[in-house]
Length: 231
Image (cartoon, rainbow, N blue to C red; front, side, top):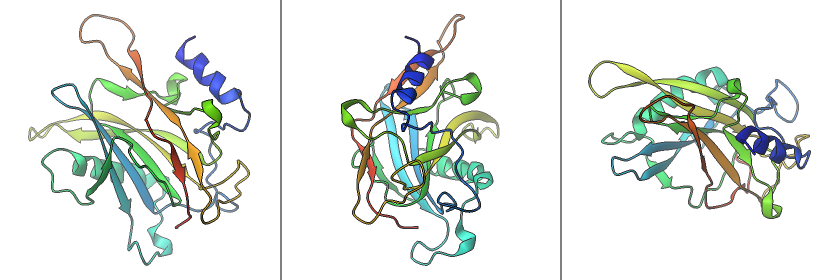
């Protein structure tokens, strides 16, 4: 079974396991809240081959005093992703600070943009333009099908190469957690918990010779769920 067949199976095994690329954000209705928060996950391969996954939480505006103008529109995301990616690189003075690592103790408790950023030249997230999917919610073991995470988009970010003044491209994947308990937009209530499991798909280029990139799948070790709504 190839990757696309595997994704199709998981998405279609339960009709409620919605495609994360489905566009739900609208000007009115249950999916109309534009997030002002970003949960940002920075991926990098160290020189010793170990995997880095650092977590950051960014709020546009005063976290305790929300204003209508604080909403982060989708077109604003690339610039903010670039800022957060530069902030997450080694030897930076981190603002916002790192709040976690390796998908441990992940809890998404507010309507938010969720961004995965891959700081590697020869690795990239699967792209919808290639009929692939970057994130698939895994319903094995009775876990929740996706009914809250939508508006997925593939993003390409230009990043500096050291101090050379040159840049190259990195890939990111962004989506919105609407904190809904079903695909119709019913909101979670305070104290309600939904646990999710998801797989992340990458393309990795070979070091030498021709050939299509190999697919690598990361299966985060913990469930990820939202508990309360804080917009």
